[in-house]
Length: 328
Ligand SMILES: Cc1cc2nc3c(=O)[nH]c(=O)nc-3n(C[C@H](O)[C@H](O)[C@H](O)COP(=O)(O)OP(=O)(O)OC[C@H]3O[C@@H](n4cnc5c(N)ncnc54)[C@H](O)[C@@H]3O)c2cc1C
Image 1 (cartoon, protein in one colour):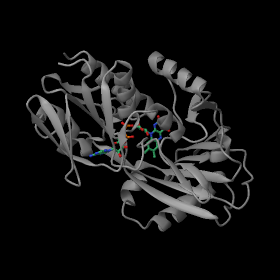
Image 2 (cartoon, protein in one colour; image 1 turned 45 degrees about the vertical axis):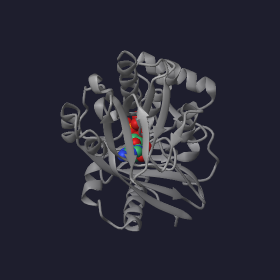
Image 3 (cartoon, protein in one colour; image 1 turned 90 degrees about the vertical axis):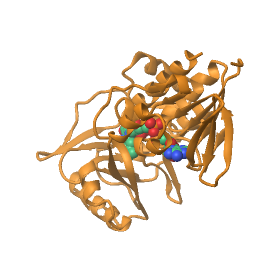
C-alpha cells in the first residue's frame, strides 16, 4: 500500500474530527463528508438575529488524561475556555445553589469555535449525505444522495449516529448489528432571547423535576455578548411524548416550565426558536469504544460507542484512528 493512504471520514462531528486530526498528524490523506452545512454535528451553535445559541452540547468535562491534554491545547489555541457558572439545582424542594464544583469547558466565543479549530485545513465536503459504500478492488467508493461518486479510498471511518450508520454498514454485519441495537434518546432545545435581564442569580440549572433537564444563561459563558439569551433543554421522556408537536408550542411549554423553575415571570421573548434532536444522546452507555473490520478497511466511531458525551466522542474517534493507523 502507498505511504499516503487515503481515508474518507463520514461525519464531521467530534468523533469524526477527532479521528481525522489524528490521521492527518500520522501523515494519512483525509477527506471529511457531512450532510450538514458545516462541521460540528451535535456540537452546534445556531446563529440568529438575536445572537448565537449553543443548541446541542452545553459544556464538556475532561476526565480522561489524554482528553484533558487535548483540552489544554484547545484552551491554549483560544478555541475553548473554562466556564464556571453560578450553578443551581431544581427538584421537588425547589431551586437551590449546587455544590457541584466540576471543571467545565465551552467553545469560545461559541461552541462551534472548537469544531472550526479542529477542522482547520482538512478538506470537508459539506451538504453531502453519503448513502452507499461500495468495495471494489480493495478500495472504497462512496455515493452521495445526488448520485455523485467519491473515491477511491483505502479506508473509511463511519462517524455518524447509529441509525444513520446502519444503512452504510450493510455488508459488515458485525459492525451493523451493534448499531442496529443502539438506541438514541430525542431532545428539544429552545433558544430564548429576552428584552431585559431576569432577576435571578442562576446562570445554569440542572432540573430534576418537570419537562426540563437543563437551563443556561448564554451570557455567563466566556466570549458571549451580554444579550439576555437562554437555552432550555427538555428531558428525553418529555421529548418522546412531544416529538411531533408544533415547535412554537414546544417553545411556549418549555418557557413556561423555565418560569416555574426560576420562580419568576419570563417576559415575552424577542426571539424564540425550538430545535428537535431526534438523536440527542445514547439511551445506554456502551463500551464498544470503536469498531473495526480491518480486513475491509472499515472503522466505526461515535459517542454511542462509548457513552454520550463530547469526551466519549473524542475518545472513540481516537480509537478508530489508532486502529486504522495500525492496520497495514
Ligand atoms: C441537546 C444536546 C445536549 C448535549 N449536551 C452535552 C453536554 O452538555 N456535554 C457533553 O459532553 N455532551 C453533550 N451532548 C452530547 C454531545 O453533543 C455528543 O456526545 C457529541 O457531540 C457526539 O459527537 P459524534 O461525532 O459522535 O456525533 P455527531 O455530533 O452527531 O456527528 C455526526 C455527524 O455525522 C453527520 N452525518 C450523519 N449521517 C451522515 C451521512 N449519511 N452522510 C454524511 N454525514 C452524515 C451529521 O450531520 C453529524 O455532523 C449533547 C447532545 C445534545 C443533542
